[in-house]
Image 1 (cartoon, one colour):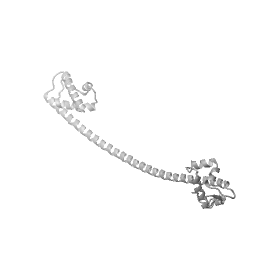
Image 2: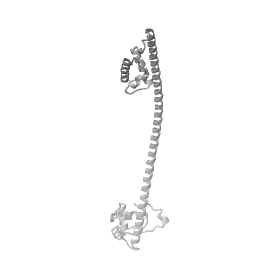
Image 3: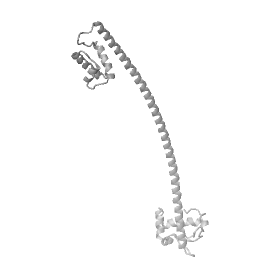
Image 4: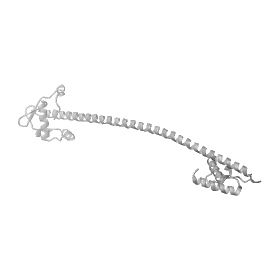
Length: 238
């Protein structure tokens, strides 16, 4: 029992004894501000009786001194028994706390193990995601490259149709005759068509041997128009 509650109990027991000459659990507990159970109040009441040398007053006559001594001895025995019970209860509480602590440590160890496993799984997932993103980036790059090659192949087919069967044209002349959507398509691919850029593309195709042939004066003439099967063997345009 807390010291403040024990002090209250002692004061209440003193007043009760002074007014009635007897103190019992039944009469004492209602006087306490927070009440209490027999198990809780009993040991403190025994302590009070031992401290006061409690001998209850009799209505008819006082108890003989030998009997008072015997009662005091009984009270002392009860106090010792209460102390033993309190010590045993403290030991049980400590044992229960140790069991609880061990159980808590086991649960914590299991939780940490699960956390480690979850973190390892997350790390593996992140690594897998990084690899997937790398593959995706590679796939997107290849797709972009294929789309660019297909676009410039269409441009070269259009230029093949623009070039005269006999005769030559330079890049600036060809550029003026390209379809507007072709010029827009090049700009969308961040390769705006200028005479300089187009000249470079035409030289690249001439070196591959497809669509155009480069003349010494910077002009171009019609070259070989590849069939579908042969076009697959052509290197990508620069």
